[in-house]
Amino acid sequence: MVTTDKIILNDWHAVARVSDCQPGTLKQVRLLEENLLLWRSDSLQDSIQVWQDRCPHRSARLSLGNVSDKNLVCLYHGWEFDQAGKCVRIPAHPTQQPPISACVKVYHCHESWGLVWVCLGEPDQDIPPFPEWDQPSYHKVFFGPYYFRSSGFRVVENAFDVPHFAFVHDGSLGTRSNPVIEDYEVTVNAEGVTLSNIHIWQPDTDGIGTTGKVTYFHKICRPLTLYTIKEFAKGRETGLYTISPISEEESMAWGVAAFNYEPEMLEAEFQAFQDKLYCEDAPMVESQHPARLPLLPRNNTEGTMLPETHVPSDRGSVAYRRWLRELGITFGVC
Image (cartoon, rainbow, N blue to C red; front, side, top):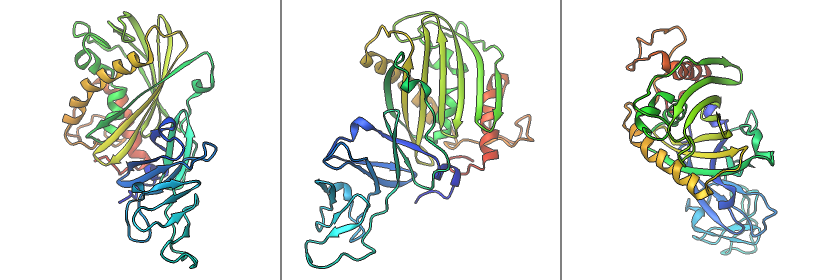
């Protein structure tokens, strides 16, 4: 059942890479507890379609069917649908005009930053921005997707939680011998939550052993999307990290990174480094109870109403939780 949380329902969520949706292919995904079908006609010029994965005839999954030229054919009874989701042919009754009710539910779809974005409601804003995508001086690489048995908000919070680097990512993004987190700045406005001037020393900043001081800038531009800038001696690494809520306690993470310097590692090596970080993060995130993120009311400055305790280095997550509360988020939180 699709959520009634309008903020989440009307937002854009990444569900696949554009490269995964080749002409004539079908792909099944799940978003907000809804089974979806992604498909593209035999022509690369046609846009990717996102439909409810259900035939209006006898509710069979359309993802079991096949593409025929520009149309989709249901495997069960051969009903054929055009790209608007309207049935145009019923093989058992070839001369009969298909009934008006023989239509598939079609959702909003957009292709940006190499990802397929879906909105199950009525989008009230554009796809989350990623300014480096169109800059030729930046090298781009994908990472993920990563499955978490946890609320997407827990996953986002973990992504900008720097204090865990020294322990969960000891030897790469942090070290137990230097766990101290300096003060950093947090601002909240109409554009989201911003964390800036986060300084940390890393024994392996890029997966190939480069050691040094790193400065992070995080902008939570949507409830489940994080834009990050990481600056160190080599240059600047930016990233768009977005979480798609499969359900209230399941999520999928998608990432795109961009570098303004020539990477010394292959794309596969960078992905392997990100895979390693995910394997370290997932057990921690999935162990958190409750799986849904506890929100923090604005007037609860000490956090005493929560089953979780906060310290100064948690100021980013405290601001994030209050912001979600003010937005009126109800899906995947408690």
